[in-house]
Length: 334
Image 1 (cartoon, helix red, strand yellow):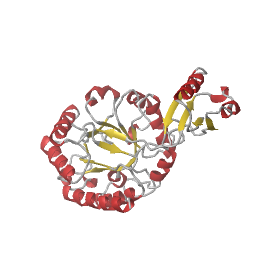
Image 2: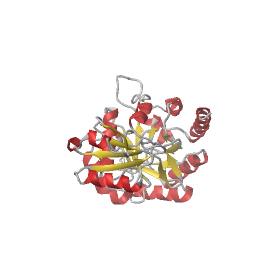
Image 3: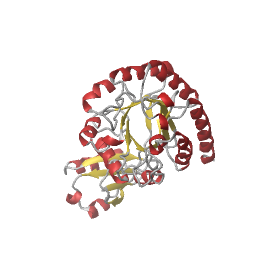
Image 4: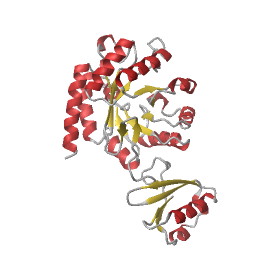
């Protein structure tokens, strides 16, 4: 349920209403927008008399929210959430470019790529230190060493770093990681989601390869219910009948997520296609569809990459892509 207050409501009146609601055992989420103040109620609202609340002189209207997600719901929070990482903002008209290799391999490799993507306009550096792989015999990442190399790259370039967390036991290693990524395979690892819900750190939550839009938002709800409201949703393609691409990029998910939720939405065209030459057109399309950012894999030597070389752009290809993304953004903003 949401209660929309009138514009002339005083702080004292607002707080008195909130205290009365909380005394009934309900949780209150307050959202102040440009034009309205909204009180979102979480819990069993059957104890409330809607007619009584509607009759209060400070209440503009009362609405029931039938969706199972509350904190992530745009009805609870009409304004776009803007998440800030250092000087980088995501959401609310702010576009973020995240780029880097699938996995951190050497200090030279990550430093070279970090400098190239920064010069091309990237805002953040991605790099996997812990790698979930289908085969147990494939490269699993440098783990703690990879984390340390990412920190070196951040120190050299100033780029905030994004890296994937697979196990809550590794959380101490991620204390100085700027954005924790939860990969597609862990989107519904609810124990892990509860743990990162206790953090005060931005979370990049990727959609599972066979999960619905509602399930993605519900996973975000797990994190937010724990107290961490800094969630970035990521569309990274889903498993379909297509036999020519790794996954199928669900472009319709971008405006749909924006309609349902106030959280920022970024797109991963690298994992969505699995083919480097398809990454640019999908990145352009995602930008045109209203994405708040892109996360793209870049490698200086894709043929010899330890993993996912086939979907990684070469540095010069990323430079060209970044320039075209700016052009598309300029057109959209006119």
